[in-house]
Image (cartoon, rainbow, N blue to C red; front, top):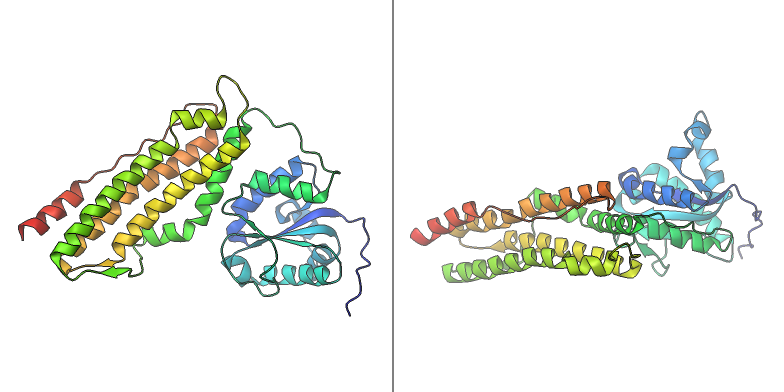
Length: 323
């Protein structure tokens, strides 16, 4: 029988962060918000002097096993593959086994199976929870000793951009597949009629997705979420607006992947590939919008304008129709 822990209630850190370098962008924001909330955090970027010259195996084992009240563990395929994260999580899991309440608080970026982390353990989805929200939830986990400060002006726009960026990070693997024109086969057409009919249906679907992007960010919805005439925004509506925006981006990637995954007679392949590339310009415009919106933090009029050039598709369609 494993004995109950005898670790002192007084620890050096409230929370230690265990993550892979590839996920640092998200984790860095979480660490910043935690510190703003008054949480004592072990974050490697803040501990460079302490780590310098130390026996890291022993030092980090002490941090992740004994010197933190909770361990925020950011699970991803990168996390599962790294040597140092394996060391950190082993120390954290050893600590978790010797106490009668939760210690490891997992945040997932994907469905990677992590040895030692039971499938029934509750987790948060880092692709849907913004860094600020995650930090506030972690602070709540610590109890009443941590009191969230008054939110500064413009917090609504920060919440929106944080939530969107978190969601887009969750689409990153699919975005890479799109940029490299990878797609799994999802259907096969053997006749010209099937290929042209499906092409026509998918171009209509593309128009619907582009229109949906504008609809999600309509002035009416923005006013409901962010407030009007200096009114305070609605956190739940802002989060929902951001989530819907990410879902439409996901639909755009799925649309292109569906076209690329459709096998057609050879004479239609160039048409299908050119059509899938219609998503390229809107995706770049979305990236640019998110960057501008994040930088502006509500201090300026930042709009998303979606346009695209269908000339390549029209040229390929003409070839198919005249041969």
